[in-house]
Image 1 (tube, rainbow, N blue to C red):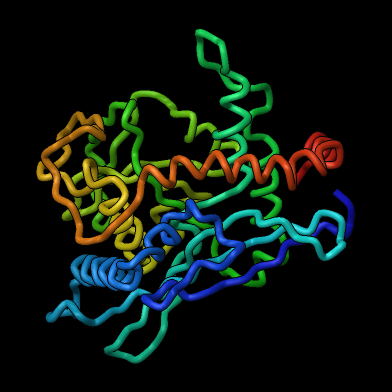
Image 2: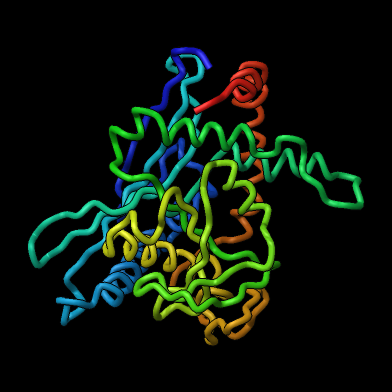
Length: 325
């Protein structure tokens, strides 16, 4: 890619007064919560859940479970392909910060957590569908996810990223409902029991091309494992409070988005298969439109195709072919 290729980072606080901007992907989970008549109550309730979860896990020197408040930033990354100032929205992630009321200091958390991407919408909602239309057996296109993976790695290794963030990202997702997970004997004091999947998922393979490894852990007080995608060493590269900020934030969102799994009334056993049709679960007091999110992902994938993939196709293919760290 030419020398003018660049990234721009913008951030906005995710609090009860948050309103999605015109450039925010409307299927982004927190944007979904921040619309409608209950938008402020949704956000207030979600943030309360996050803070309660954080303090329950960070219980030492915290007798009233009110020592910490989690502050969230929505980090948006734009790509300027030709140095023209015309930027395309690339990815959107969450950044956690922790305010310690006992010492009156703000502690930097983890960047990543939630992950949204227009190009990923294109890959999964447009390209994959077109490739398999009319076919009896599912398959992936040649080089599926290669461009997205290289763009992501290029961003993580850029001076722009390194100027804004001290550590590499951790992304936390729900487990797949078509995989079986077995609990191992490995137990981390904060991440909990580790699980292993019976096979690799398409999401896991896609994130592997982004340079990310995956491990599955069920934190204390949780009812199902979470998928943690990371560079390096998940267990040793991050502090206790950093890990707790990701656990509390993303498990809260999963309780809202996937209550059948993460707000189930039964705890995952030694052998566990998530079930999105599980009726034995509790609902949060937070309104979330899951059908809207699925419907709009196709629309946003087509937006990426029209405004990024097709206009810059030859340039992107040439860059991707010759890409090297």
